[in-house]
Figure: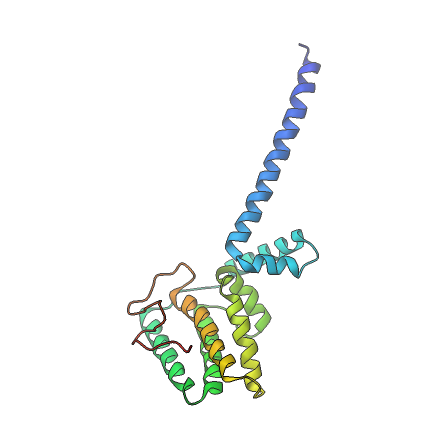
Amino acid sequence: MSTGELVAIIVPIAVVVVLVAAALWFVNRRRRLRERFGPEYERAVDRSDSRLAAERDLREREQRHRELDIRPLPAEARQRYSRDWIHVQQEFVDRPGTAVQDADRLVTTLMRDRGYPTDDYEQRLRDLSVEHGRTLEHYRAAHAVNAQAGRGEATTEELRGAMVHYHALFDELLDGGPGGPERDGTDRGGTDRGGTERPR
């Protein structure tokens, strides 16, 4: 077999190998983004001109997140926040609208203490989506009801739902992330430290 014939065989094989490797790389990258962002992946795709543009946006979020100084809270701070949350829940009984507004402020303060910038709501969503994509819809729903509460338009049932939504993100932020260690004294089945039931 001549050198030319050998090259004619090897080159197409090499091209196929490169194409297969590139395809696998794209598939793996897409799967990793889906796993990391959860529902936020499809939301980004729905709101973008193309899937590639959405994935580029999600990678930019990851890059920004790496540059933030996100840090866990010391045990004393976690305990203080847990007590503050119980106080907000107790406030809900007599002043549900005020309690929801206080829950929003508490969650925002917790974000700031963890190292998230909190000046802009939309940027908060983008930053949180990297580690909290699966609970971000809770935050969006709670934020919307909080805006209604500020106008005096939210029902008690909507306010109760907002408290549950805020609590979902509050728990993750307090634990350090979706895979963070559970706090001593917390029953994930529906009660908080101290045995206080979540609003239902």
